[in-house]
Length: 309
Ligand SMILES: [Fe+2]
Ligand SMILES: [Fe+2]
Image (tube, rainbow, N blue to C red; front, side, top):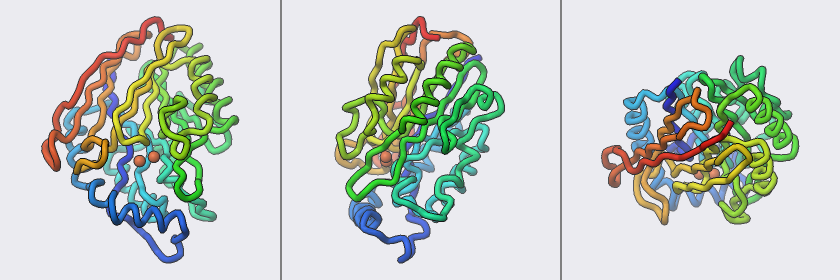
C-alpha cells in the first residue's frame, strides 16, 4: 500500500483568540510582548491558508500536525485551533500532538488541549497495540501496515523556558508499544513536538529527557521520527539493530515573511510503501517560494531505511 502523509508543524495560528485580563501572568505577558513586537508580523494566517490549499491538491492519505497550533496556550486559542483542525480534516485523517505553546502554563479547570482529543487518540486497530501512559500518550493509528505513534512532550513551564519532557511512564509505554508494533510487523513512524535527540535544541528549549527518548527509540526502533519546534528543517539519523532510524524536523507552517534563520512556511510530503518493510521513504518539501508568494517544491530526498522491521 503506497501512502502519502503530509507533515506540518508550528502553525502558531493568528490572530490571538480569547485573551482576557484573567489569563495574564508573567509568562503570558512576556509571550504577548514577543507576539506583538515580533511573531505577529511573521506568522501569517495567509501563509497557513496557502500551504493548506496546496496540501489539499496533493491529496495526502493522512495529515500530521506536530504541535504549536497556538501561541499563549489560551482556551480561546484551543477552540480556534479545533475549528482549524475540523476544516483541515476529520479526526481519522488528521493526527495531532501538542506543542509547548499549546500547553503553556497551568489551566486549572479548563479542558485545554483535551478539546483536540479526537485528533490525539488511538484508532480501533491502534488501540489493540498501544500501551498508553496516564494522559493517553502514546497513541497509535494504523494505516495499512504503517503505525503512527503520537507522543506528548509538552509541559507547563516557567517564563523564558520552552523545554519539554516525555516522562518515564510515557517512555516505558513507548518502548512497549514499539515492541508490540514490531512484533506485529508494522512500519513505525513516531511524532513528537520537540526535537527528540540530545543537543538538537538548547537547554532552555530542548527535551530534558532527550537522552532517555533516544535510548528507547534506538532500543526498539522506528523508520521515521517527525518533529517541529525549532522552526527550521532538520535531519538526523541513528542506527538501530535492524536498520536506520531517520529523524526529520519541519519548519513552521505559517512563516509568511523571513525571520532570523527561519525559512518561509513549508511542509513535508512523506511517501512510503507500507507493505515494503525497510523500503525507502521519499520526502518532498513544499513551501512558499517567496515572501507571501506561491507554494511550490523546495526540496526532495530519499531516505534509505534498509533491514528495518
Ligand atoms: Fe513553535
Ligand atoms: Fe515549540
